Image (cartoon, rainbow, N blue to C red; front, side, top):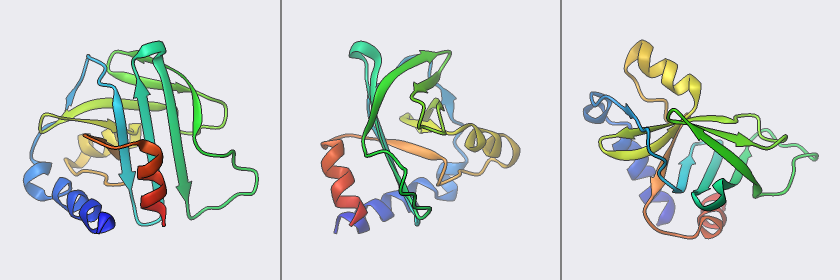
Length: 144
C-alpha cells in the first residue's frame, strides 16, 4: 500500500500541470526529511537545523561491497539556497533547495539544468519534503 501511495505521489508531482509551475530558489533553510523513490534507487536526506547536521540514506541497482552502511551522517552548509553535504563517501554533495508549487524540494544540479533547458521535471533528480514519519522507518518500508 505504501509503495502505491509513493508511486501515486510521484506521478502527481511529475504531471504536466505541475511542470508548468516555476520552481523558486529558497533563501530560507527548511529542515526535514526529503525523499526520492525511483525504479532502481532510493534516497533520503534528513536536514536538521540544530547544529546543521544531516543523515543520508542511499541505495541503487549499482551494488558495491565497499559501500558504507546507511545512514551516513555529517555536517552541511546552507548558502544562497544551496545545501552542501560534507562527507567523503557522498558523491552528490550539492543540493538546491526549491519551492515547487509552494512545497520544499531538494534538486540535484543536473535537475536544475534540465528544468532550465526543457521545463521538464527530472523525477530522479528531485527529493520532496515528507510531512511525517521517521526517516529510518521510511527507508526500511520503501526498499522491501
